[in-house]
Length: 294
Image (cartoon, rainbow, N blue to C red; front, side):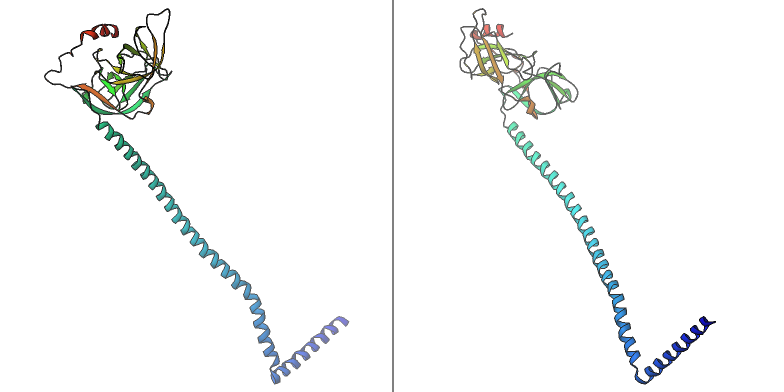
């Protein structure tokens, strides 16, 4: 019974206080002013973090959009740089190729011979190859024939071994099946230049013991084998040894052409003139050399 009385007393007191404050506020208006100020302050305290979060979100979004656009622009610029690098590489390669082709065009063939250019498209050298060969992009359809001499600006590369319709195989000087009659450019001592495999020195066979041949001497084609014109540079002598049990000198030479770096070669062909089928005259002093070389 006491608890309802207390509740009733609290309600009555509360109503009295409310009515008193209400009456006082009607006369003075202080409570309205206080509520307006405090309400604004409270609402400001509540809204200020919201505005801060909104500003941060908008700023983050603007930066994100900016960064996305910047990344896309950066990706485009990267692709452009790659394209320019590729174009620069192609232009540089084109310039180098034009320079090489320009030098090849300055090549002067021997009398009664003409030449045509060909690109190297394959290598077959070293222990894995049964023959030391190159493959070029010209064949019988371009007039290429077996045993045509193949040269570069530095010297003789080899000869045509086999021809296809659009490609040909070139037997290199370094192959053990290669034999070319040569003579020294200074002392004119004859011999037979023989290959010993790719990466090995060439051997000059059948050089008489009393022949004069010096290290550093250039070896030229003698023109006696019937394949190569006379006077083409082939190799340079690096070693000369005498033997007490052999009738010939041991002569080693290095090829003038680095075949591993070849990209273009020249194919030599006899000029089909009125005297092209006429054999070259061989001086009497060279007849013995021809028999040895063959």
